[in-house]
Length: 154
Image (tube, rainbow, N blue to C red; front, top):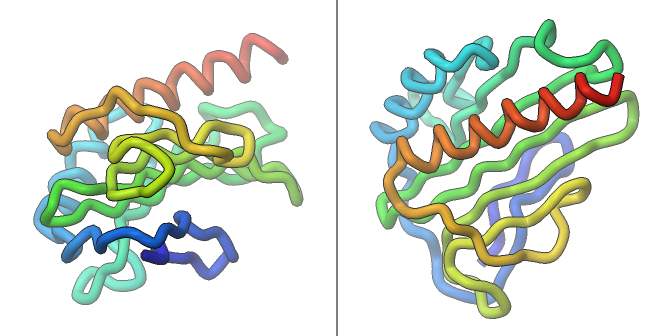
């Protein structure tokens, strides 16, 4: 399986195991609406278009981050199989800080796994489950803690 890719060259990973299924567009819309209630989330959008989406993109309020951070987004893919990818990307000039929470078949990692920062490296076990809102708000809590740690360094 080859994971979805983005225009910016990032890839959501690859594996030789089974497919994750069809994109669950109603769940992506629910995730977008619910994410909008989080104080760090500035906007959400189904990309490339709402009529033919391939992912949910959450954008974060830049004023919540230190000035050195140029852009922050969370790309979300949720499938009808309850498999998912949540890809956090923070950009500072040409540097990227990224990590990813995944749930999909993978031959060399547990089905639910986490690719840690700063480069979404080798997968390790993830405690996240399969309920879309639990996964969303656990990831958003992690991002909030990340923002707090950035401010404590400044």
